[in-house]
Image (cartoon, rainbow, N blue to C red; front, side, top):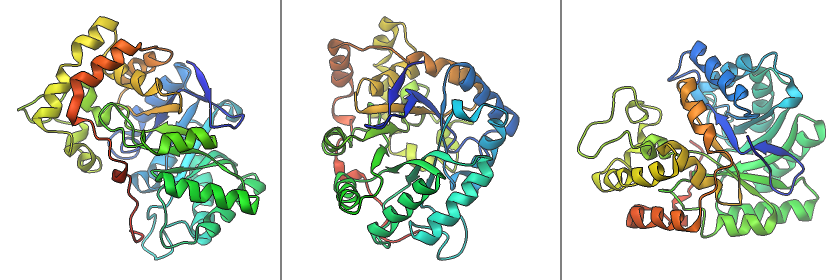
Length: 332
């Protein structure tokens, strides 16, 4: 396993991290989830990403139990706040009240005194940004949070936050967590250039495009039983990529992966890691074998010719529009 700095901070993260969106507490039974976490640790992954909203807070609980007994100083534990975790009007968003209550709940469920990175899971259009950033800064000063970041924010939103932090002397953002893959490159035009300039890293989710880039979804055929496409929690994310044009082009990536001695999943994860602004690629798993396969992408170098072949194969099905990064106008 290789490691990279998170932004301009001194924090090192494993360039492949383990995430439990959809899986822990939902798609995967706890024993299997624990086996996946153990496989991640055995393969050298030290960075674990979750969120309070995953599986209705159950994902944090499962991860906390799975990591119990592991030396805390050897781990980087990330979680997030924004989406609803209760029925009340203040059980959502990035207000001081919700952030403060949410971080305490996350710490309790994760069985830890602090999280290494606390992330705003979306931009909150109903809370002054100064309020959110001041609350994050307070948590850093209290030692409950070591670093702060965001997820799925636009370049303008990130720039606004950095400006306020600089003016007010708040702790600066060190990272953004966007969706990023061969098929979904919406951060490249605006978010990545700003982040490179301002010292933020990307911690990318869905590098395998919800499994589409493994090649297991075939054109003209229904999704395999038990796959991400059939799960109600994740099916809506993957549905936009399940058309025959995309799936046919993905099948055409197989010879490229084969020539490199890589599985399709390894090629997909290695591809996102070629971007120097990416600090870590988040992988998920329903069985340990998937973890062991994916981590082999660490340290793989793809030359310019290979990258061009991938671009030529995928062509017009790649999504590049920065406007696809969107937060709700009103809290859900």
